[in-house]
Length: 183
Image (tube, rainbow, N blue to C red; front, side, top):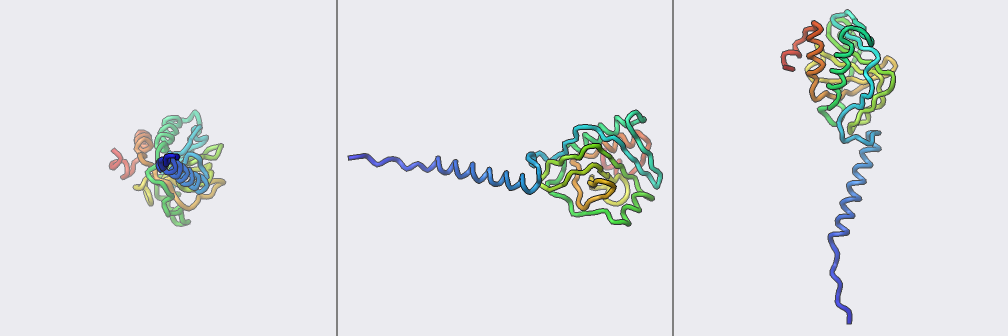
């Protein structure tokens, strides 16, 4: 006569948890287009090739070798190293907002040779340009608008700590109300 075997409950439960975890992970991979969606940051491997600062209608173009280019690009990479949101913020840039940015605001535009990969839950595309409002509409939120080929896309990501960027802009002589709240 055989003795009854113990019922194994823990092994199937562990397998079920592992399979459920893998399904959730893969769903997020397919949704976001990024294998590292859980990191919540941009993979900025190279500094921007060009930085444009627009202040009240006056544009200053910084390229490698320009004064403050290295400091500003390092500050931008540091500010983009962590995001404060997991999904895109549902705001866009209307023609009126872009006109305001061009004439009455302080914004920083970053241009890259290679597309950026954003490791977030949201499908963010592969932008080659970023717009950061510093003074004016959407400035207080730490928003970063994405785009490519001269177009700005709907939705923004939010920098967890934009203060490195603000500090360098302040050192360059730019003034904005957001600098007082940053530190």
